[in-house]
Amino acid sequence: MKSKSHPLLGIHSLLLMVFIYVPIAFIVIYSFNSSRLAADWSGFTFDWYISLFDNRHVMEALSNSMIVAVTSTIVSTVLGTIAALSMRNLSRRMKSGMGGLLYLPIIIPDIIMGLSLLVLFNQMHIPLGKLTIIIAHITFSVSYVHVVVTTRLAGMGQQLEEAANDLGAGPWQTFRYVTLPQILPGIISGALIAFTLSLDDFMVSFFVSGPSSTTLPIYIYGQVKRGISPEINALCTILILVSVTLIFIAQFVLNRGKGQKKQSVLPF
Amino acid sequence: MKKSNLSVLPVIAWLVLFLVIPMLIVVGISFMGRDDLGNVVLDFNLESYSRFFDPLYLGIYWDTIELSVLTTVLCLLLSYPLAYYIANAGPRMQTWGLVLITIPFWINFLIRTYAWVLLLRTQGIVNNLLLDFGLIQEPLQMLYTKGAVLLGMVYTFIPFMVLPIYVALEQMDKKLLEAASDLGASGWKSFWHITLPQTKSGIMTGSVLVYVSTTGMFVVTDILGGSKSSMISNIIQSQFLGARNWPFGSALSVIFVITSLIMIALFNKAMTSKHMAAKEGR
Picture (cartoon, rainbow over the protein chains, first blue to last red):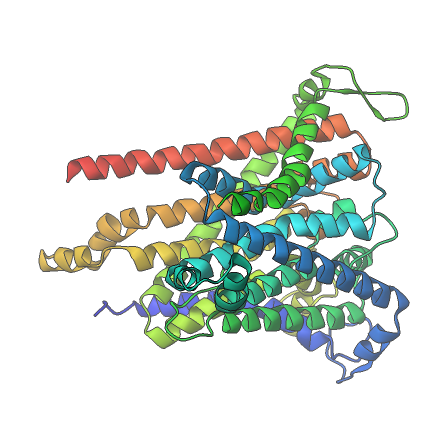
């Protein structure tokens, strides 16, 4: 079918993959290294994971991150789903206008989004804290939820809804028993993506967090700036595991259901 | 139908309030002044913009563009062969290649940058290996150099380049390749005249993504470059969070966004004109 690739191409690809994964692998490996200072391997230990859970600052950052992620996920999933559903009935012009507005958060550089929100909160005299981080996270998550749910809706068609309508079901009944069950995988997967994005965000949160509400990425940034401690390796390892697991679940959920076109949570 | 039209309002309201209005305020502030305490005061002037033309900031802006362009070119050179390899591999390898190239997207870039600190610092893994093998006598200073920043940027953004190019390679018309080989074109020739032009859209998308993301990133410079190298985004960040000179920070942000938009427009124009030419030629 296709011409066979040159062997050099395979070697290049392999080396590039090694380049991408070796640094990450070192974080994971050194999170089990018993030495506090040296980069040399000096024995296997779980100590850093244990001391991580005794670290008051880490636990506080974790709880802040969870509160922010859960709240912003719920709100952005509801808003994004409503947007996806209601946009089907808009005129073509309204639709393209809305589409443009909803793509803005994906296109705008994080740094610009973060600082402009900082300016807004300052003008409105809203003190920086968990609330402002939550607002910021909802703002960028809404678009991703919207994209995922819209793709799912597009794959579903409207015949079943029309049939329900013809059989006398009200709008709410149609939504509850026909539309919702079909788009649920899209909603769940959108929510998981929103949750991951929130858990991972540093750039936007950095501007709107204020001194008292550190999230995990902001905590990591502070620690990295001060130097290296093996606890950070452990914390990073856990975060890597959580993000990657959530994304795989999102991918799996989205592709559940027979006869559906394969979909992807890839950013492209 | 009226009812569903109204249900779109909350999202519009949210995005206007927390996205559009804040950006307009930033544009507004970039034209304002400051009082003695550093607070923004209503006093229309172009001072912040004229300050940008200070050789110091122009120099930093030039360095930023240079680093961003260099990162983009290196990402492109490294990513194209990988994307090509994945696109032409068997279905199993293709799935695995895509999964492996996507995973870094979901690992925080802060963590991926930090990994390089672990590797590059004076008592880091690379230095220790080199010392152990007797290749060097003294640890090398690798962290806090321009090279480290470039390495970190390329490392962070390679996946942003691989995926769009892969998509373009997947979508290209493969019949043209068969035709070319039937007509006796060599592998290189058909790559140069058929594959490369047909994947231009992927190259453009990837380049714009990498360029804009590099320019807007202050973490990699901050962590791997230390205080030695700064980019426009480091200055913007410090103007907002450190120096509290919001008018100047805003002016720099506006300049940053406008240059990015111009870059995107130029890329787009280059792409569409080539597209038109190709269509007319047929």
